[in-house]
Length: 318
Image (cartoon, rainbow, N blue to C red; front, side, top):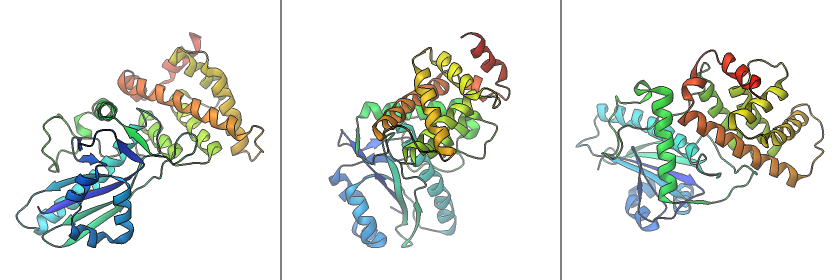
């Protein structure tokens, strides 16, 4: 082989020991498979700290065959490496849509096996669960398929074919999927409410401090359901309840707003930690339901530039 990518993934376990194939790379936590993939040269290259991480964690891996590591191939694989590592991070974010977790990419290395050189990438986010914990989470094949399916819908529905990086060769020849993953959640796309909401989601998941995490959750709701700051708490509460067709969420949203207000204005929290944990869990579920519904069904509505009439209509139908 000529180029190998191996990434260490925190807190991910698989029920099935067989490697799981995505459109771009494979995933496994099977120690026997990892021993086959991570050879002596690679372990020497990355050093003791990374070897410990690879031993303890699940990995994503992919290979690219080439006769020689010439300048053209090295340039192409360097670009592909950047695309793939951000694809991995985006996919790990979409595991959250299946169930809450603290899974994130720790580090990724790309090794040119003929040229004896390497490149590396440190993950952007250290995720925690909705209640601020760092724990391992096991996913079944069906759950992984659910995350893959939703990410492919997101890629197709939000960006279309123009959002898919087709100019580079794929690491794997997986014919099971028609398209590749979107490379990353792009925070520069200010005109897209859905894209912006996912950047807030990334931030929320990276913060173990619960009042700050809840603050980011509420930013997601405001990003999706607000036009201006007029009667913001009332409008967000009513619109979310109507959009989900679930009036019981109103109490949770109002309580979450109270926690957010106290946190951002420097006031002491009135409630105990267990109470705040419960609110964080409930808001996490609300945000998950909303984003899944938008990505699958209402992406055209929330992608439009003028969302005012739709949101006002939510108010008028309460």
